[in-house]
Amino acid sequence: MNIIKYVSEDVCFSRRNLPPKYKIRDFIKKKRKEVNYICFVFCSDNFLQKLNIKFLNHQDLTDVITFDYSTTKKLTGDVFISIERVRENAKLYKVKFKEELGRVIIHGALHLMGYKDKKKEDQKIMRKLENEFLTLLI
Image (cartoon, rainbow, N blue to C red; front, top):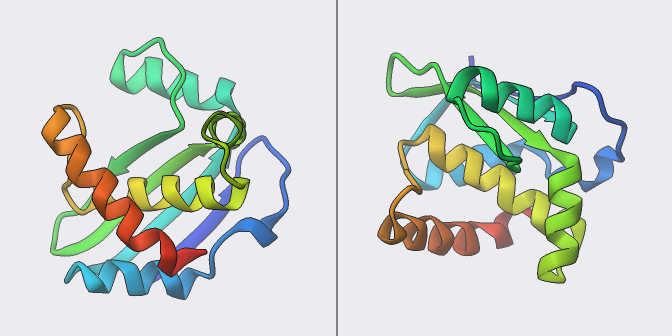
């Protein structure tokens, strides 16, 4: 299939901040993976928090939740991203919205590739990869 899709659930924002889909494919290929179907869903804090409670039993706000449906080597999944969290984090870390959005997109894609971030060591690995590939997207 090789499809990457952008969908807005309950938010309006400028899509000019989104990286071209071919750049996401290139990033994934650099990690020796292939895309089957990935849908990036841009939503509100409220929408994402409801998913977090329902599926992960977490009460807290988050910027991204990834659902991996892959059954083959090709990546298949949904990546839900809170635009409100991305905006807040961009302010907090003093970076442009577009950069923070790119970082979260990469973060979600890394989860689809099997990377974890629960342990400190895993977080360092993901942060390094985010920084490495961020230049490809923005």
